[in-house]
Length: 303
Ligand SMILES: [Zn+2]
Image (cartoon, rainbow, N blue to C red; front, side):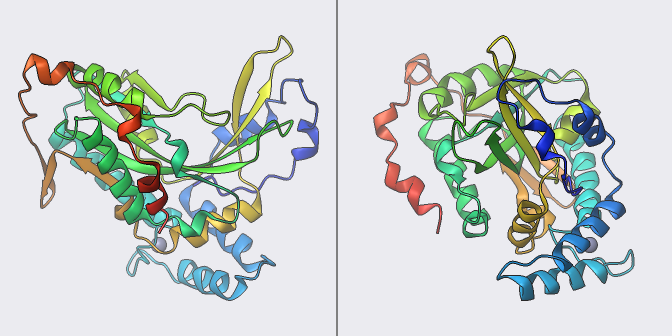
């Protein structure tokens, strides 16, 4: 989690100017998990929101987390980092770093919510939403190892309202990526705040990209227009109020709850990849229709 609070927003108020790289550089030097946890505790102790009692409870839990007696909370950066490390070791039992793999990111506009509403989005419902999406896209047989991520998105000139996005990052074999892309694309809507709902990138740097897929920290993406008018985005630190909101959401879960696997079974510390269905050419030619996806189903995921 990127837990450092941002106090340098005033320098980014120009509508079309390129933002300073100072924050980006600072962001790259991400604090160690222990320092991140301390920053979280400070933000939770000093919050002035109506959820102050719960914030104090979470701060106590994080404060009491030790190597001998870990808290196992998804709000704890140390426990989340340890789970991420274990998960990445397990991943090598499913996919080999020598294989041709692709990293996918799915941002579904229906899983966005306004600031203040993040704790109402339940992880179980998010998981069901993605499972239904893959079933609807006729590709639920494709082995995918993933992690449910959260990001805070805003526009520097307020061209659209700031929103939380709950997204899925995953790893699939390269020979399945084309089918996945073709089947999912018609079901994912582009909006002003979600310009690229589906992104696929070949994995060239195993360590860096798989760590990104299972990143426990929450990012803040700020969109802006460059001097030549191009739409761009830069990543920076979360403000203290949004960090507290994220911690209130994450404290309901364990870090492992954010894992998402499809057509992969876990046996102890090993993962077993299931063989995808052999589809006939007529089945492969079938494309899901946008109309087939019922909007009320997405609404149900909030509960
Ligand atoms: Zn902990």
